[in-house]
Length: 338
Image (cartoon, rainbow, N blue to C red):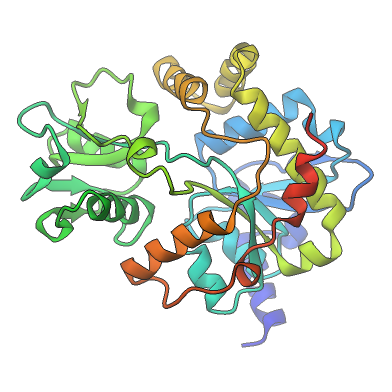
């Protein structure tokens, strides 16, 4: 199969003729006109991404940095990466896709260019009837989503770093992050790995000891940003502008001044506004400061991810930093964000 044929088939299948419409009719692309070359940004659908997009639009960071961008949402865990690898998009700025390094090792002409949220905004919830620690998960059923997906992968890494045997836990696929949480609420599982957005839900679930992943896995980067080699080569100015805009947005999100704008953006992004969920995200951003206005990652941070995926079997061997990552745009962008 030729690359051009793969790209044409992807465009037809996703309904993305030149990314002129969002995939599957999920959303109308946001277009910001500016001096830089147009950058095609893709992301997964979801409340958190929709909130970031709404804030970016409302606060005008694209205009501030002269960004010329088109944003489209692509469904499926692999969707954004597939779009970039097929040449249908340039960059994904926020992604929890845990196979990026494996896909690059397999030959995808893509590189990690920085980070989205650096700290893992996940925790382990359980019913308050005997599960108090990670060790208590032995013999229990834990909802994590698809096998070898992000939630499952991070639970395996968590158990490994705590010296516990993950093979003694019954990990089950209950679907999405939110569905895993609901499975515990409905007594379909004993515990789950789920978003910190549920911390204020009031369903009776508790966070178990050492279950907060941003504390238990401090070396793990939660979300990476990645771009095509072609974009890094031919659209560097535009990528720098994009990364500066996101760096400024992240810096603002972690400041008390962003409170009203954040809640308004959340209301715009969520059909039935959940104040408790919004408050949990807000509190986490303020207390843990999970982002950085400098989006660049170090060789040590990339190395940690490589070691983790090698141990889990999804990556065969380490590659040199320059083969899998390029921080030049992120470092240039950081100089623009004051």
